[in-house]
Amino acid sequence: MASVEPTRMEKIVSLAKRRGFIFPGSEIYGGLAGVWDYGPLGSALKFNYKQAWWDFMVRQREGIFGFQAAILMNPKVWEASGHTEAFADPLVECKTCHERLRADQDDEIKAHGEMHQGKGEPAVWTEPKQFNLLVEARIGAVEGEKASVYLRGEITQGVHVNFKNVLDSMHPKIPFGIAQIGKAFRNEITPGNFTYRMREFEQMELQYYVRPDEAEAMAAFDMWKQERMQWYLALGFDPKKLRFREHAPDERAHYARAAWDIEYETPFGWKEAEGIHHRGDWDLTRHAKFSGQDLSYFDAETNERFVPWVIETSVGVERTLMYLLLDAYHEEDDRVVLRLHPRIAPYKVAVFPLLRNRPDLVKKAEEIYRELKKHFSVAWDDRGNIGKRYYSQDEIGTPWCVTVDFQTLEDETVTVRDRDTMKQERAAIGELTGYFQKRV
Ligand code: GAP
Image 1 (cartoon, rainbow, N blue to C red):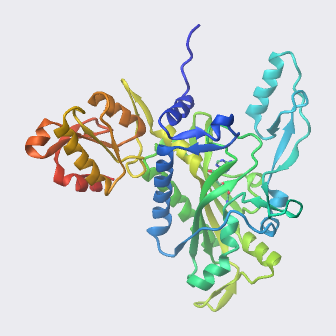
Image 2: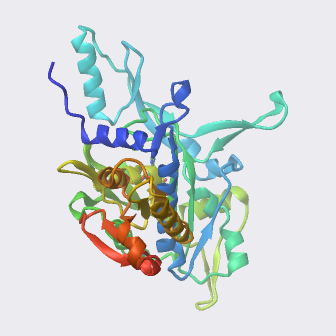
Image 3: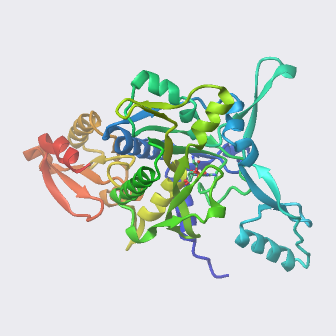
């Protein structure tokens, strides 16, 4: 039988598992649909990715404040935000096998029908029913008295319900933003495509408060659209695989007045990476109404009191990291290379002694390894030959490899090999830290 070439997606899933990036959640028990665990390299990659977002969105700007709200919130939050009522997907059920699919996923419904047809069975669908995506949990000590709460379906609400706390503690001048990174949970009907649609995932969001003025809001909306696209380009994404797409009015979330996605061209089509939404005064007005608190802003410059409007940028960490892996993955001659931006690569540098059985080389390499580790995440490898070690580091995206060889013992220089060009050059040991700092 002819062997079937694995798809690009299968190669990424396999590399992610083999090299310690991403594993199926609770795998030894057969896994849990829509849940993935991040291994030693995956957690480093995720950490670097989130930090890069934080630097870009918070640290390097004026008037953007960080926030970390709790995942568990008073259930009234979700009534006020409209999620208990409107955070739902239409679902159809196959009358033959009772599998449930999202009514808007034509490809999956078609494939399912064909699967039954192949077995000579009908696939007859029920009418679409609304299915709420909020995940419920029960908290409290005594079984009968436990209260139902929701695991947050978006990280957004934790920011809006703290609007007054931020005003009173930070006294920000409008326009200003509150940024947050954290877990969200959705009872997705059909999780799948690796980490594309998960039931537990992380979001990175900015809620940007502006005056309630359409021209000002749209200027902020356009500014953030451009800034967010710039973020993907600065990470080295292939520009041809990125585009904007405007939501049709019937496609927008219940809170959105305008919505655009940044999309990425995956092996399964153009898909959402991030949403930029004009949320108007929906959140603050609703929370003011449901909580009975005043969530308005007083503008001392104009002597006006108003409820600000919100422009939001919202991105899924795991989903876009998967796009990044798909984008960075290259097969060249006899090597696989992940061309990750040095900033987010799990290791910045790998250090090797040319021969593992030469204590003088090993000792020198260890000294360099320990020195570089003060500044960067550094890998150590002394297995097999140098060529194999290079390829092993290429596959996990390490931008540079440092080899300690016999010349090192004579003149205190090492070989630095570049992942992308595969070029090697000599560098003085004393200058290595600066050499990498300049390039990361
Ligand atoms: N606060 C707005 C909001 O949550 P969204 O479009 O529902 O908007 C924003 O989600 C981003 O979160 C998406 O663009 C996507 O990157 C990510 N996301 C949403 N659902 C996801 C899921 N089930 N699995 C992984 N990522 C998801």
